[in-house]
Length: 266
Image (cartoon, rainbow, N blue to C red; front, top):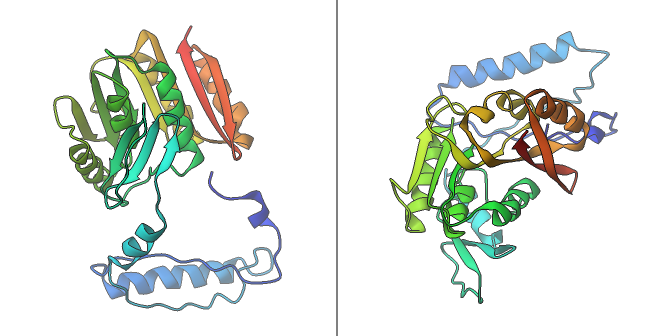
């Protein structure tokens, strides 16, 4: 879902691919990965351009990339919500609510179009007594933002344990903890109970299609389902899933080739 179609075209030069492999992974495992790649090149010779397939590696301090990232992260304005890294001093203007981010170890800083669209639509639907859930919560930014908008309770769910840890930390930085702010480690809604006024899911098209058959059970009759992470070419597949699962689209928004939908149960 995140690959630009232009990348499938023949290119005269190599493509550089970087990956990070944790130090605790055994050297023989890394060797197996590289062998698999070279085997794939041999099997695909003549119809998939692998380029030179040169490989290099270096050992880095695990925190180096975090320090580099911090130099470039500045306050991000999303309507009345301002996402601010904890290490930067920021004085909010009138009517602004500040979401402090303590860590960049999970997706969701507000910079990406999908996150910003979700934040902006939340501002239209979250009310003082709203009960909200963010499925695929990443950094916890959408759950924290919901509480700052006045929600009574917010739950975040993520399958990634690191995201769960990060979301809990970001909640504490903003003054939110259980039972008002709850973060669960699970796959979609397999560990969720109850119903919600607002369900938000900033994930990817394939998972949204799957989730659209489950979300109705957790959405109050007058609630809203806000979802993003959908690229334009997948729109018809996603909207078809909405229709098949008794949802109507009440809002559609596009930014940078990404789509965000607001749906209600028919």
